[in-house]
Image (cartoon, rainbow, N blue to C red; front, side):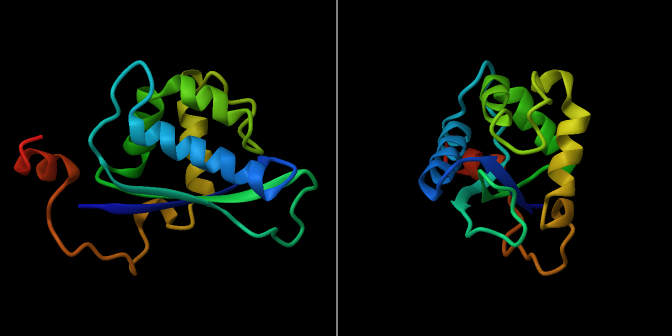
Length: 147
């Protein structure tokens, strides 16, 4: 069953363009399956947007909202993604406020997952307002299409 993730975080960036570049780079890398291992077939959708400045936002930062729809349990999902693209996360975590010291990510998987859960507006996929209109996982869809 699919679940949502809405990871709201700040990046070290001086302007909206830099924040959107960071968001676009993260999405592009995750979508392409960059890394030592192919990413698991658990992502239905993935998008990120640079958000307007928030109240009391730290100077020199910009807010980003990364959204996905995925198939696994939350903890397993975020750890599988990190394992699938550790170089990407080692690079991007240095740009995310509060995650800078989680490099290398493979040495900080529990801390990494907790930070994401603490900043997930979808509460680890447990929001009752999210509905899936079909019963298929991404892997089942791929298999059904001959992938």
